[in-house]
Length: 225
Image (cartoon, rainbow, N blue to C red; front, top):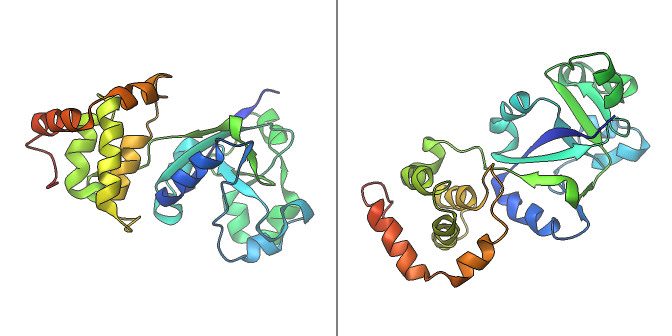
């Protein structure tokens, strides 16, 4: 059976760390797991005490967990024969039973359409070549004054978007959960992969000229910068 894509959510502040890991061999998607709780304490040896990374088979179900897990969207592919899967509803009811009855993802998929709330767990980390960062799950409320600029530039002009990312990062300072940092992440990562020569084009661009032009063009929607 071929590899299967699963979806993982994380706080947006973690995306730069995940991208940095992506330049190496493996990526620790769950390095900020936090306190080890009942689910981790009940896990079998390979997964014990938080030694796992989790995702969802259904992207729609994953994105419904934003309020709990964060706005950062990451996907990665797994070998369905090598990962365990269980229904979220079963885990919430009885964590020990959920681990005891967890089956390889391949077994679930062999039965046909997998349950929408199917969780996928594997011992971490994940091979970097299988990881992809997506556009963060933001909305007008989370972006504040940055929302129109993100909507008007992020997908339309990737050079300008990358330069605006640096501007937004400077304005974000240490507020990694605020609108400016979220805007920077939205400028940085999109669902469509960037062109291979984007870094070169950004390096050759005149930042002041590009930013002046794009802010003038978006003058009715740009935040106070």
